[in-house]
Length: 405
Length: 226
Image (cartoon, rainbow over all chains, first blue to last red; front, side, top):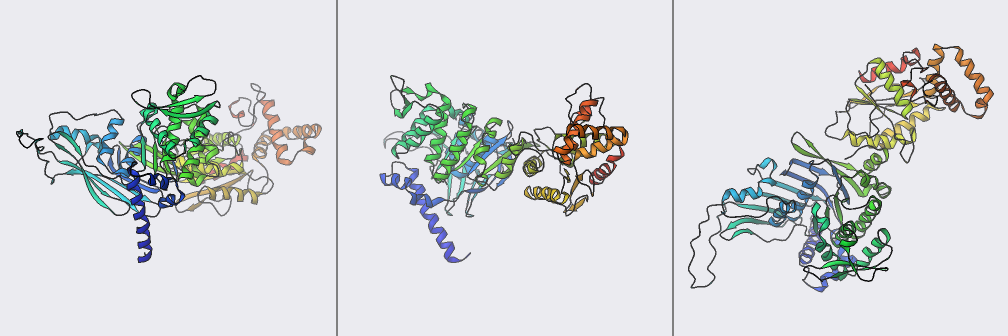
């Protein structure tokens, strides 16, 4: 590669990193919001994740997915690794201890870390993330974008890092409480970002409990939804608020009016209880009604599309997109997933079990084959394996009734 | 035992695959495989529910869709693909339509019909029915087998075609389909609505599967899958 093109490439990338740093802190400045919505910023990261590799993570001994597209549909039977694939992407794109920690919580397993703070207890929190519970080998994840830039992550126990000492006393005259923390190796997150930046973050234990290093996500415009998310009304309210700030809520209102409720006048976020919620103003109702009372499926529909609108130049991960939705809105769901993803340069990874949902993809995928790929996960001899199917093949298979799940 | 893949093709379970234009052809090939005890082949055809319909125009999508089943980790390693299609009135065009579809689906394509060609370790073949050097359709082949067994039927059906105006108002292929349909309905007494596809299950089926008319095709399938 010529020096000039390498230099230009890095410069462009460097700008992108600044942009991502800034947008990771939504309160940074108003200017950032303007930049976010402007077309000039969109060009900062037009490349998408094109290839993905994971080793020793969850049910994956080793997988490689090449030929990823703007909208990637993840299919497979129960227990074949669909959610694990989304988790692997989430981990690989964020590269933080918090991201990994949140995954078991989203699945409501192994929640919390209780005393005694022992090595066994600490390691048990993380063992399920390693393939076949083998933490002697690192978890390795690599994302390659369409320009060939790579982001890598290795997660492993760092046996050479000293255990953190006891906490400092709160007052100078306070007695130092003797605390015994046996050696507990820290879990290292060794990261190499798309721009070549390197860092190591740790999940460790000190006398007060778990400690996670904070760090910028490798691609912070990543969003992940576990299946239970479909009833998370607070999250949808928060996302809708962010859309409102950017004057983009009209796009969602228009779609909801068209697909769900023709008498919908507006959607607003109101803070009447402990948490803010999304409320709908409907022509024939005297008062605004919580969206959750109208339809949890509608709430989920709004949340998924809002995420795609919000995460421009980034990645959105959607697990079991059919949950809570009537089959009648499946065609519209695909249509707007593609439309919003194209308009906002968002890359989407969405899993589904539903044959109806897949069939509903047909009108959208026709003439847009290059925008789609299917990622099929299969369990083979105790490990899950991945096959990427191109959009043309998905369209043909759905048209011909060939089972791709 | 049937060799026809279910309509919802999912996994390839045999190393050789035969693709036909429609279900009538698939049922016939299935009978032939059973009769000849050829066990290494599966049979499939485009879906009648497809937006593009059945027959040669749907080959491209079916073969492409089939690649998704082929890519499944639990599928057997596919070693060969045989497309059995109607020669129709222009065998050269029919062959080109089939090879274009193979190309579209990224399957190896043979250079000529009626040849089993090994292309990078993958067997590829196209057989145009009724037979080499002929025009026509599956129904021509089935009628030939029927007439070899019951010679009077040919004259009988000719008269029927004449008096119904079928010979004048339809092309040769359509006329063959009409005559085969009439035969199936007449002989399959348990199901007068019987089609050429379903007649194999009826005791009155007028087409002998052991007919010499099918020897060339049987021999070709054996050569393909042996």
